[in-house]
Image (cartoon, rainbow, N blue to C red; front, top):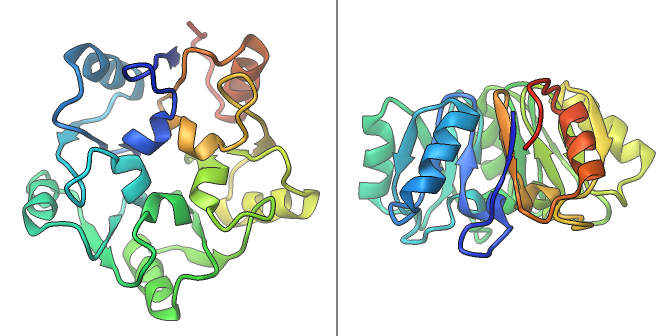
Length: 224
């Protein structure tokens, strides 16, 4: 299933919300109508909590069904809220605090910003129990913004090379295609909320963009 909405006019949904196959992390301030759509589309439990005191969980978290990852600036009470729901969460050291922008991961692998330290990469490997590869995508080190990935597929910044697409497909272990969202926006990871059950995109996303998203994420229940 694919749904479309903007959050108070903002189409950068992947910055605001983190979604995996076992959980979605959202702001406590998110309107009930949006919460209902997220629940229905992604079919996962929802945890309402700030991250690092912010409402931008998607930009500040990454992970897979094994564990979620946050920076050292996350508050203990936020981590405890997540853990109380049975979700593992680990802290990544270093100066790169927008974890969702610098890591893209699923249950098969993780691609990370080359500036992440070896210590941070080791924690990611152990926490997520996957292979970790550091690289840029389309010349960008914000790989979490350049790629939107689930356990079914990955949509990648349209300027990515064939070699980069092959790398994403190899590391994440899913079919990979280039694409855009919100009428030509290339930073798909910053704009898409997705898991294996569904996808949510901004209101301006066009029919051809929806068709590509439907195809790459292997969704067959139609679009709205």
